[in-house]
Length: 71
Image (cartoon, rainbow, N blue to C red):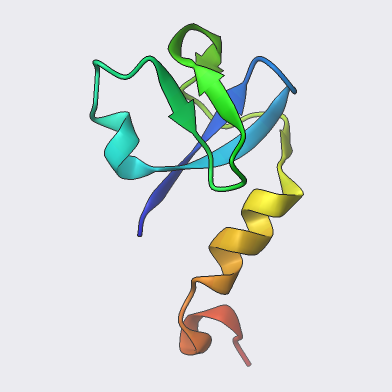
């Protein structure tokens, strides 16, 4: 599944959100891969700041083996 990395105004970290949430303008909040949730008014739709380690690990483990490791 594709993800977008957005900045949370709650913990000041950048989290991975499923891209299907990005196209739903009626959402009241967004839920990150790590289960961190952010109301629409506290999310910045851009990537900046420290990346969430839990999101990085969860997204990384979903990558196919041939994409994860390069020689």
